[in-house]
Image (cartoon, helix red, strand yellow):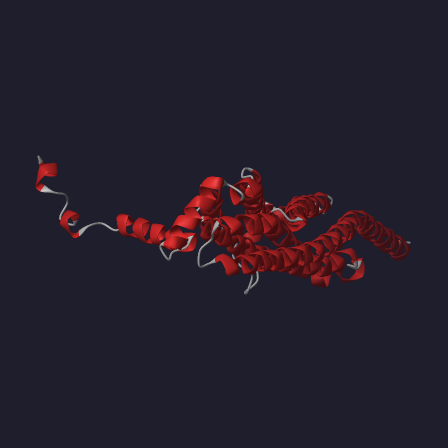
Length: 337
């Protein structure tokens, strides 16, 4: 009897342990299913972000080509301009290409904003998935965005770009266009188109980097999506590493998208300044102005052209901009009084 009772006890204990194990597996399966679903949603957002970045990279390339083409078109006026050149310059700047470039930059701006939204969606879906994990795992994923920079980074990840100098240069060329006159119009316009092309190239490079981030997120999130319960005990560390990596890459996309959106907004302002400047002047009136024609004729009788006058004006302005040797010591004696 005693031996039979012991056998029953062992069987009962075995059934109890098996039941507990099955219960743990069942609960764990539910939790992992939530994380796997998050991985699937993150993967979808990453693929969409990659497509957006590919589209925007192409548009940025078109913007670079536009800036170079327009700058080249003005090279013929680099030695100076006369009244007849104003109409030609007006035709260059008032062409449909200017408005096309403005539309192109505006589309890039919208796409940059969409990239930032998609990155937030990636972060939120991973966060939601983490909430479904068992407490013992969730505790290892606390302070998520704070720790993701360290735990989710890899050697070779680029730093978040500091675009202060780039934005400042676009602000400068915008002011230059707004204050352009006969003496500096060509230089101001060429500087503007140079800024559009160089900063457009920077945008192109940043969207390429964001696309690479998005492709990495897609790969890592797919690993989370396909994670197998049977491998969990042996590969739990890999799952956690994948989660950290997804968070870090998504945050990098968000930071890059916000930075490039600021850059694009200033490219838009440069183009708008060019359009407004050219619209503010009636080129045909200037070209047919009697006073301007008389000035040209007078200069021609002296063996000069308005281009020569423009060059002389620039030289005078440069000379006046240089400090005189008499003032290098801190001012004249009279000023000291």
